Amino acid sequence: MSDPGLRSFILNALAEDTGSGDHSSLASIPASVTGRARLLIKEDGIIAGINAAKEVFHITDPTLETKILLNEGDSVGYGDIALTVAGSVHSILRAERLVLNIMQRMSGIATATAVYVEKIRGTNARITDTRKTTPGMRMLEKEAVRLGGGINHRMGLYDMIMLKDNHIDYAGGIAEAVRRTREYLIMNKLPLKIEVESRNLQEVREILAAGGVDRIMLDNYTIPDTREAVALIGDRAETESSGGITLTNVREYALCGVDYISIGALTHHIKSLDMSLKAY
Image (cartoon, rainbow, N blue to C red; front, side, top):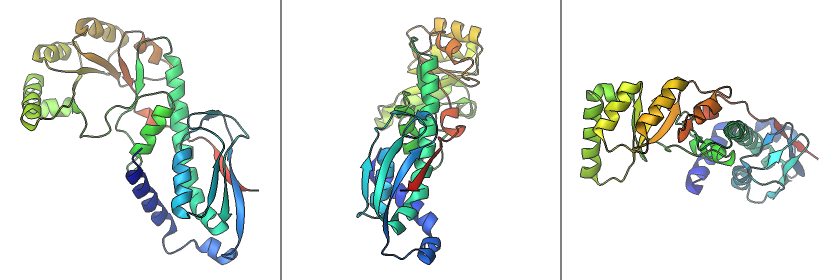
């Protein structure tokens, strides 16, 4: 994670939540009161977001003392304690919701990713994420995927060429889209990899004929068509299965021989891991 990016995110999130002040705490608890709290895990999963939580406490109040008891990516269960924090009660309560929002979501993503990774164990495929992330939280959500054993696809529009169906249609076809892309990269001296989405086997043939492509996405392919596409492509490009892939069929796709399986649901359709921050 980028420290400046994380700091900016935390400051914005705290400002969004606090507004003119935490009037609940200001109204009911003297500012001088100090106390302790511990972050309790309430269901099994993979823990993620501990480092971000530590930063939230520090940015909220540098005098807070945070003790980390678990490591990022650890397997956890009900009753485990991830961390403790001590200091100003006003500061602890101000940070509480942001810490939980980050850690619950990141841990949910890491847990879901780990389940998919386990499903394809023993194959050569890798589970990867997509750009279907929560605005402002991409760095955190993609970190959670890594902690769950997956890998990251491109971070944004800037670090890899991805020619999807709309690019191809607007450009006038696969050959023209690839040609223009290669010229653009040369002209601008950009060492970016090129991935092209295919919707059927005929488009795979067109992509291979165009040449100069690093990865071919097989979008919403059936299992038989995926096997045929992988055989057709051979070692001329990396392969990535995407679309309609679930825990039920992910291993079948992996066994087709694809290099990557991208799953948008890892970051846009997950269940947060239950946890709470409690005084003790």
